[in-house]
Amino acid sequence: MDESEKMNVLSKLISINTVNDNEKDIADYLQKLFADHGIFSEVLPVKGNRANLVAEIGDGDKILALSGHMDTVMAGEGWDYDPFKLTEKDGELYGRGTTDMKAGLTAMVIAMIELKENGTPLNGKVRLLATVGEEVGEMGAKKLTDDGYMQDVDALVIGEPTAPYLGYTHMGSLDIRVNSKGVAAHSSMPDQGFNAIDPLVEFIHEANDKFRNTGASDPVLGHFIFNVTTIKGGTQVNAIPGSASAEMNFRTLDSYNNDKVLADVHTIIDQLNKADGVDLSIEIMMNLNGVVSGKDSTIIDITQNIEKEYFGDKVQKGGGAGTIDAARFMVGKPKDYNLVISGPGNQTMHKVNESVPKSLYLDFIDIYKKIAEQYLK
Ligand SMILES: [Zn+2]
Image 1 (tube, rainbow, N blue to C red):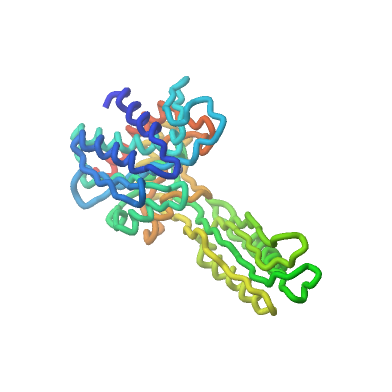
Image 2: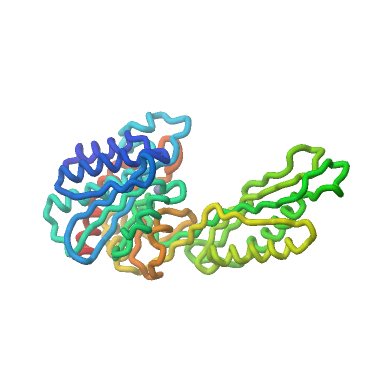
């Protein structure tokens, strides 16, 4: 593909508004693009106008998956450019989703097309897993995993915008709501009611005490994180509140994972519920375990060597607190699994005037081609 075609494909993806919806429009477009280049793909409905896309090239048992999400976060106010029109200025490409992560996804798509066009010998298959809804709960990656598309995959590359870092691990995320049920009454007659806020406050104290002092930390990811993030209760100033609730987020580690956190939350609640009138309960809003994969896996080594040609010593392995599709794809995979998170981008993700350097986008087309060539040698 020549450069103007490469720009056209990215331009098309940016012009399709996939703010937490409509990924099927991108899937349909990519299916046609692949078909024009003799590549078979499947558009797999998730719900409404949302569909994953799976495409494959090559032949053989060994499978390398390349993955990117098609959705973006909302554009927000204050852009200097139309967020849904790719705009090039001084070597930067502006638009919602340029960094996170339509440039990475497009680079993967074009890499596959070029591998096919060039007849590059591949001892195995390259499988594209393009997903929906990564920004809110990773439902597309969950569906692909549930439907078996990760089962036979030997190595996974996720094109999230981490360059020049190579990700192989991230924290887990757990969101829960604790509900407190009381009995409403007039504030002049508290004996006829039970104040739902009181035990909730006690719970929050104990939870802060416990989860802010776990001592759990990871040399790459840092400390376990806990915060109560919302609190609601009561109806008016002169009434004993009949209900109250608080929401909280945990960023978990392998050494203090979601199951252990939930067990500890239940212990606190069971203890408080022993008191007369206290009725605390827990609702799980989101439960995603962290990702651990091989720091020195084959795919990490290959990617590191290739990217050193482009970014020199800036290439380093690491991890982060944010949850991505890997949390779904990696369910059931061993701790030395072949995973690398690497893609083009800068620090503008989720911000106004999101952009990606044009040269970085073009470099990653070649980087993904080289990763496939070397992994499937
Ligand atoms: Zn992303």
